[in-house]
Image 1 (cartoon, rainbow, N blue to C red):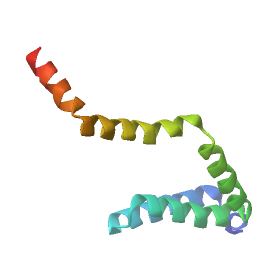
Image 2: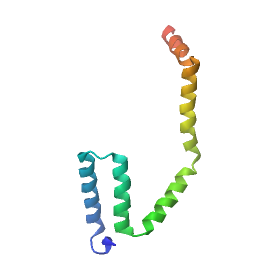
Image 3: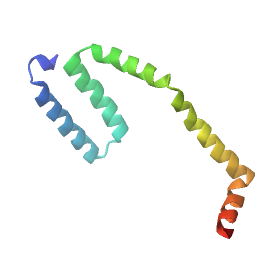
Image 4: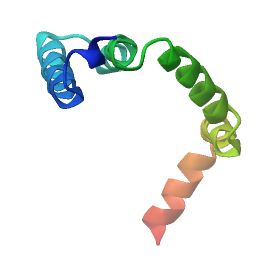
Amino acid sequence: MIAEFIDPAILGFILIGVMLFSIFVGFPISFTLIFLGLVFGHWGFGKLVFYLMTLQFNMIMTENTLAAVPLFIFMGILMEQAGLMERLFNAVQLM
């Protein structure tokens, strides 16, 4: 682990610098954060970071509030296809 040789604060500053550089170069933010989290997490914590990421992924996927997102999108598509949105906008315009 590099954290044994480098101060964790310095490792954090290096992480922020590499993150800003890679974002300004043009890499997508999501892939940049995932890759840098894996690399710098492995440098700082060792193999423990992979177990922690798996645990966090499983905990997020068990949340009930995430089920509302696709249902909300489905409701919007259904309302648009049924023509309800046009009637709703017309009613608001008449008011």
